[in-house]
Amino acid sequence: MQHPAKQYIEDVLSGKQIVGEYVRLCVERHVHDLEHGAERGLHFDEDAAQRPIEFCQFIRHSTGEWVGQVFEPEPWQQFVLWNLFGWMRDDGTRRYRESLTEIARKNGKSFLAAVIGLYMLVADGEGRPEIYTCATKRDQARLVHAEAIRMRDASPDLRKLVKKFRDNLSIEETYGKFEPLGADQGTDDGLNPSCAILDEVHAHKKPDQYQVVKSATGARRQPLMFGITTSGVLREGIGHNLHKYGIKVLEGFASGAVIDDAFFVFIAAIDKDDDYKDEANWIKANPNLGVSVKIEDMRAHFVTTVGMPMELNNFLCKRLNVWTNQSVRWIDPDTWKRNGGIMVESAMFGRDCYGGLDLATVSDMAALCWAFPGDDEQIDFLYRYWCPEARLHDTKNQYASQYQAWAREGWLTTTPGNAIDYKFIKAAVIADAAKFAVKGLNVDRLFQGYQIMMEMAEEGLPVVPFGMGYMSMGAPMKDFERLLLEGKLNHGNNPITEWMSGNVSVRIDPAGNLKPDKEESQGKIDGIVAMIMSVDRAGRAEQNSASVFEDGAYSIW
Image 1 (cartoon, rainbow, N blue to C red):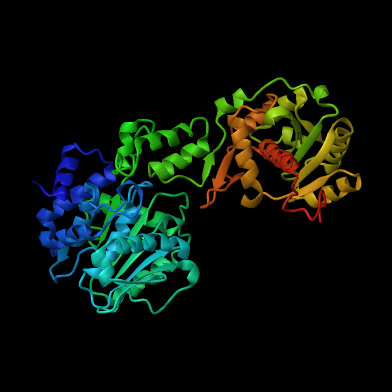
Image 2: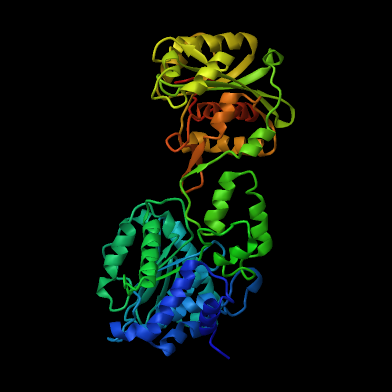
């Protein structure tokens, strides 16, 4: 029977095993070097490659459906181990000193990392081994380390050899240790790692920890930095830089160039031109599909992407291992259209309402949105838009003809000159307060927000300052998205708001929070921002809670 790693190689090359472009290049690189590696002082040692695979007989699953069973690495995992530990240099040390294994969630990368960490502690033969799991925060670094602790606890042989303390696995005979290390702990200049496992590299905003750990490996003859990650949205971070470098290494090989013989890269992802809706492509990012990744779970997550560009972005990123932009289009046009309905302003007279006022800049459009909550979370919306009259004829305004049409039809109010006169806005809000039961009004605290808030507060209007960051926008944007999908936002088919709905891009932080991205949006979005602000104020009224910016109900300072 052929070795599983060799069978995996054969199946990838024959097409029997479906993989993406970068996994195929990784396999082809290995096969090419078996024939030509000696020219560069490299050779492959199958006995060395087999040792970490045999070490897995001491590893038992500690959670899930295989709890208590011996860990049997999947073919792709054996291929990774086969490469990392089998390739040698002529001086007898390992070829690979640095690696990146990038793969979708739930495919066992953390489990594999914990196995490698234990192997390097117990069986690598390094004098006084030091193994660290590294992450942006120590709690994150503890995840892989905790997996290693459970493996040690589940194995009678490892329990005899490896001592366990809080955040420490150690071997007295070799003075070896295995510990978690978070970037939030600060840098320890006394590190001398023989193995560093970098968890979720995509989340590292700064390269500091990576650089410190890498430089600290310089005292070792054959150190290993084992980076694991799923793709992300933080494109300026070290994770995306490693991703690009890994691709450069693979594509360099494909063109006949040797970029870095010491860097191993295994990137499992769908290909650029693949149809993400085709389930046949999902295995490219999920080599554990049918094992730790269940097709039913994948389908369930895919269903949530329908009509939700943000969820699609998340599915592509975390389930299909596609690096996505921090800024992404947000509102699906068909979903928006399904929420339209007849809106008669006079029918809103006397109804409770909550507002959002986005002032933008004095030289462009400002938006006011009133939200009128009804039964079963239904909300009706009414809008007011203003812009300086000069913008209708400004040759630099690419939307001038649209502005002119909206002004003629009464959707857009102009104020004299080339800057918005906020007195018009204040007067309109006061006039609306005489017709509607205004219970609260969120006002953009940027630009001239505080001045107009103070003036409206003096008129007895219940105004609240509102920020545009993740903290303010995150929760109401989630509520807005949910209500839109449920068909509960009657936007009244206002043409300006409809245009803006197709422009909105949102920015995502590493924690998954959202905020509108005016810089990346393809046009004006002030009306949608005002809608979100009004949803926030209405939602707070439902919960009977004050804004995070309030000292008391409707107090602005």
